[in-house]
Image 1 (cartoon, helix red, strand yellow):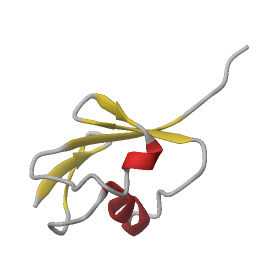
Image 2 (cartoon, helix red, strand yellow):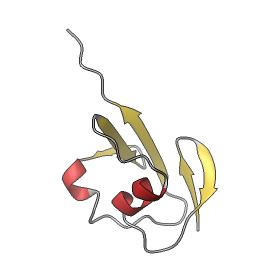
Image 3 (cartoon, helix red, strand yellow):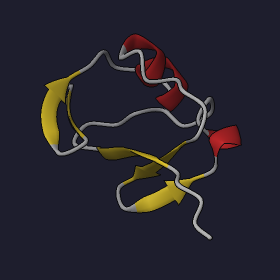
Length: 66
């Protein structure tokens, strides 16, 4: 299955949740946020959402300003 992860094309196994994918990629880190197809996804939903063909996933570091 083809997806875009941080604007890079990649293949992944079907049926993975977002949590599964991040674990496989060693990207399960505190202080990160995730957008799926240009929509921010709350962390508590990552384990329920299944990655689909052609999904666009952006993972980015949350930075507090002040």
